[in-house]
Length: 142
Image (cartoon, rainbow, N blue to C red):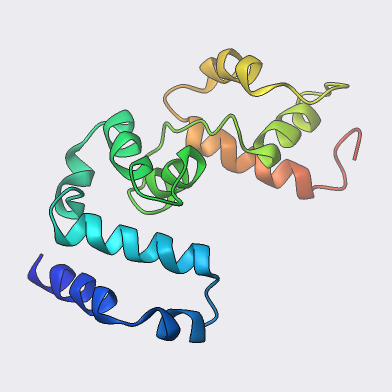
């Protein structure tokens, strides 16, 4: 935890020109700075996110500038290793679901919510397969 705070303080000490010089846009630099501020002042505790529910993690992360629900869901899946995340706003998941199930139209996010229930509690795995389905040229409709 101490190391994390030191890293956040180091980011906060950097001038904007250093962040821009590293190739970050002004918006991305502001997002990184906001994340560092949230961690440094205790509004976002990284050390307890793994003990939080998915929705609690999402709520905490989206409070940071530049982090939306999709980014928070990717964090849940690929950093925290959560197996039951269903990113319905992800175009690749929606497209892959349609291809894998032979649908003529890509489902809307609100429709994909219910369609994903069949995969609970392994929706992250199903999402991964949906992403792969987009790449699979052998699927019907591919």
